[in-house]
Image (cartoon, rainbow, N blue to C red):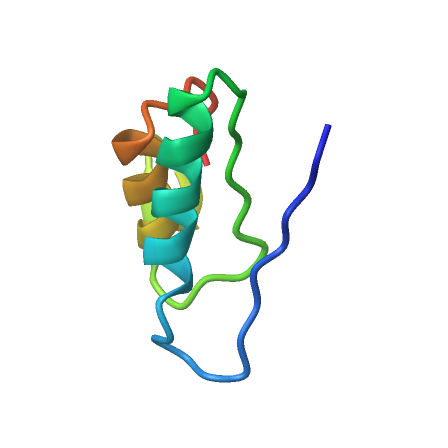
Length: 68
């Protein structure tokens, strides 16, 4: 298993877009993908669970079975 951690010293630097792009590429090559956002700037509540809007969008876009 390979773990990749994306970080930036600036907000809105494109980390989410890069995560989706790399995730889609890995899925197309048959690899398993999971997404983790430890702290997010856009908290929302989904089915009684607090998550981040970006994490939810990434999970939906990559068709991940585990909710963020």
